Image (cartoon, rainbow, N blue to C red; front, side, top):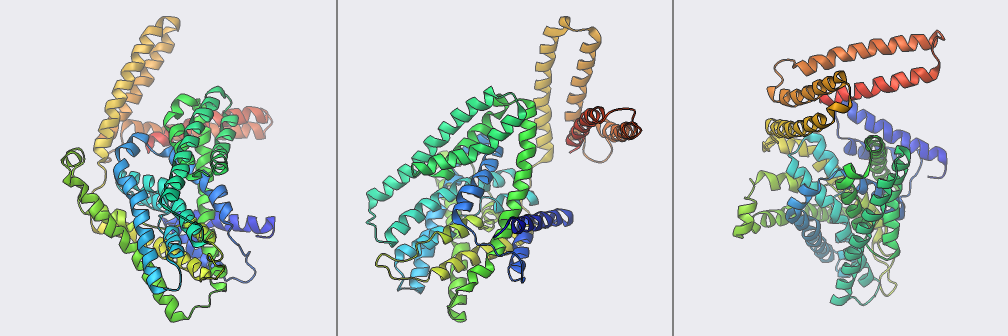
Length: 523
């Protein structure tokens, strides 16, 4: 992009595409990639050359931080074994299998650089899989595993890419070098991440201004990743560790106003960044194919071979990793073997994304002795893996989940658990109110008791199903009409000059907060 105008055009198209996807119930990542593919050949449309540093340092950290903030640490810990098997074991397995296939098809290319390509295409995208999984309503545990995998697998792939690239350009790489690289990258990332939790958690706890809290939250992922990169540690691991720690402790670190504002800000940031990322991937097509000089037959053959290897390797790894571990009695007792439907869906959810393309653009320019290799072909292969897995697998994942009848989470059990905990919370609140009752007027105490009873009743009403309108739903419907009427009166008074603008703003703010609470309770 050569100008601010081009950047605005790109962002506007990304927003429009995401909005259309929401309007028509489509999957935004897929729609935006397809739109980008088409626009890449439109004459006069801004040409975009993706900078790997922009992706790995500018776009990926906030996306990972957002995902980590929302990830349940207890659920992550509970599913740590399958997450690590996918995020570490599967990435290494896929990288070596793809590297071997490419080396067999291109024997003149050293295995080290073929392995580097394998590392590039091995990790599923941190955004695509979870965006699609949440959109189609996959079971909570499947989403947790996919989220956990996507939070860590980039770190594994980037470490493997760095080691393979060092070997490809002639650096001596032994077992000790690999171990040191893993220790510095992963261990250093964990240290930086824990330091980020301590430092930024302390700052969040001391800040009482919601705007400053929001500004600090925006700064955190960039500060953490840049610090990690300074010591050659994994910025991905550092950002994920910081995000998990801050997210888990957020109720203790921030005020209610800060949490509400930060939640709204990160939802907006995710909407813009995710739309931009997938559009940028599609827009790379013109640049990727520009310097390709491979004959069509050989290009199609090696592309099909790499695609098949990437897709099949995930299933070849998943089923043994899922069921062989259950041969251990302790594992089987703690976590019984799941139905085959679950690894099938997880296997089909291996969509690649922008990190794969950024990593491909970071491949070495030449080999150890200065000889060239088909680098542009490797970039094309990475791009093809992204587009095909994202469009083909992403578009068909909902149908696959429906066809195999993957059992959904039980909403009745969720509502029962929520109501039970709400009952305990209400008891604790009632006990606290009883202690403090003498310090307030009786009318105030009675009103608080009614509010508490209504909140408890609402939790139990959700168990009643959707056959008829519950009292809380009727309350929300009628109160919404009342709020609309109040807004109209305040607006007319402002227009007639009876109240200043500041009074209207305060009244609208209070009514907006109440309406947002009504909408949340009706969900």
